[in-house]
Length: 189
Image (cartoon, rainbow, N blue to C red; front, side, top):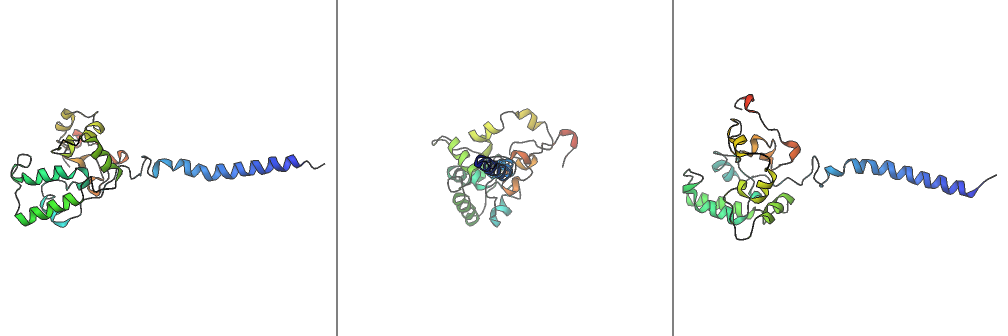
């Protein structure tokens, strides 16, 4: 004898099976599509690309992505290149102006990247961070790492050496799944 209830139950089970098989890959990938898991873009900003900036600034240190600081920080930094972290990094006026324009146009205020926005909102409006490593966001993200651990490691030496641990820093990615902290025993790179 045919019972219509069996057909309803069978259809419900079929819908449930289809829903679970299509939802499982979505749930498995949840962390990879912007929610902060491996491969997300939550910790990515546009990498530095300006040829003059790469040449002039990148010849001494990693060419930091402009979106890692607000415009006011870049403006302050460019205004005092004669005292750039203990070095004289003065440039010809035209080069200085060109680099400053690039940095300002690509600062955290101008970026749509979630990381840039997080850095920006962490900084009180009246403050002008002198470096990325002095921003409240950076300090919070690196709170478990002591200055002594950084300085004593010959492969790092400074919080300014992003690329020492962040393997994709030059590409603008600071995802925690791409971090590889070199040990002092590994020797100099």
